[in-house]
Image (cartoon, rainbow, N blue to C red):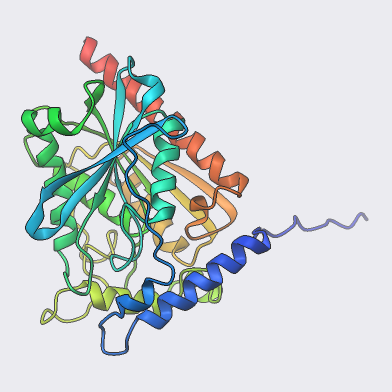
Amino acid sequence: MEATSKPPQPSLSLPWKTRITLSILSAVTDASCRKNGTINRRILTLIDFRSPPTSKSINGVASHDVVVDETRKLWFRVYVPTQHASEDLPVIVFFHGGGFVFLSPDAFTYDAVCRRFARKVPAVVVSVNYRLAPEHRYPAQHDDCFDVLKFLDDEENRSKSLPENANLLRCFLAGDSAGGNLAHHVAQRACEFNFRQLKVAGVVAIQPFFGGEERTDSETRLAGTPVVSVKRTDWMWKAFLPEGEGFNRDHPIINVSGPQAVDISEVKLPPVMLVVGGFDALNDWQKRYYEWLKKSGKEVYLFEYPNMCHAFYIFPELPESGQLIAQVKDFIEKISSNVYIVRIK
């Protein structure tokens, strides 16, 4: 009788350089989070490297900043692929990650990521600087991101902010981690708003930051993996939710598919591309999101990276990072072709 061997189990596949970088980032962010729920942003300057906009094209991409509301410090950075000036290009409105607490569009890592999206898709990328918790709690972040859509929908604003070949009928909302949460909720909100020239054609949710009161298997089993831990996510959710309303991680903005979930069966949510990492402690919440979308009758595509942790794609040295960029390109091209068919009909 022949012995049957078990298939090899996935293992976290990261080079030492990436592991060390993740360890440093985690240590500094943990040190910045005070027990009283406030944050020491001075400590964050140790790792908060910023990139200025580049009016001259660098590696085929130029960028500039646009202010939406000075009082809120609401602005966005536009990335334009200069080698595609004569082509009709989709617009990616991008929401950065950071647990609603950290980072910004001009952070070195996100500036680099958006440049890659602009060049590789290609697309005009609009990367949003939304207000951060705990100084500004929910719904400040979601309001800021939605207000950027309304800003772009105004013809005068659009003409001053975006190149002529930016097609707002092919607008995709994308984000990772907290930005993935934003992408879903802002898209849902956009479905109920009457835009004049902007249409959200699709959502790209990269390892979105969801959660709930329950402790899932992945949260327990993957304790100690990079970036995400129960201790960190609990602190972030407490910093994010409004004070005085009681702390409940089953709030529908957190547990999108949980007991208080919004019924989206009649909402015309656009197609969703969902990216999940096998070594991301949020894995179970993200897969529940996928199942919830399917049960609600929505078009959703799941892309799994069994050997990757949270935020893997911001590290260009990983082959999987380039693979993800290529899959985003394919998704946008596929959905865009459907948009063109509808317009012709």
